[in-house]
Amino acid sequence: KIGDDIIYDNNEYGKNGIMHGYLEKDWGTNFPQTWIWIQASHFIKDENVSLTLALARLPIIGDSIYTKPGFLGGFYINNQVYRLGTFTWAKVKMLDIEDDEDYRQIKIEITNFMESVRLQVIATVPNAYKLSREEAMKVYPHLLVPQSDGYMMPTLMEWIDATVWIRFVDDNKDIIFESESTP
Image (tube, rainbow, N blue to C red; front, side):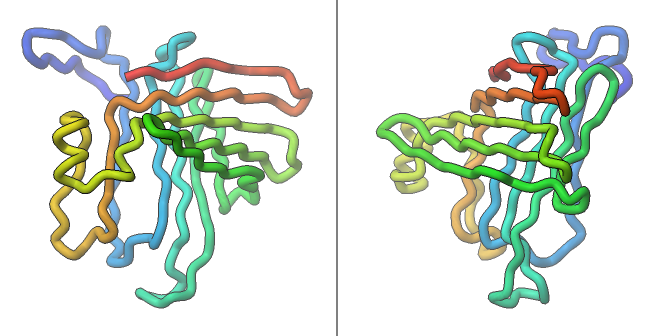
């Protein structure tokens, strides 16, 4: 949680000093070959729910061709954080990426070590992947595409207006939470 209110353009955010935030710092020198990063915290059903999920092919030794799949995630609900990741022996049971003319959908299902707690995620973004950087910036001006300086190849596209649907199911297969996050 982040304390203090934020005032931007005469609008106040985080009433009463309570809001959720995310902070990251990478001290490493090697970037994964492939990765998917999902961050959502504006769920229609409950604004106090947050999801962070990262899946990647991680380099094992330096910049070698040897990689290993890994993931980590945190799901915050009802003042509790559920940690799911390679380090907890959780598993990605399904990862599917579907493209059509307008959208890209990333579907993920994760189970815990006992394969009982399930997290299902569907992230939907505009499909700019078929366009060049210049074309994508014209069609989608809200798209964040950093200039390539040789450190983050291939081209990275980040969306600030994706939608993320999640369903979180407990050991008894009861739905704890199901909702969609919107920009």
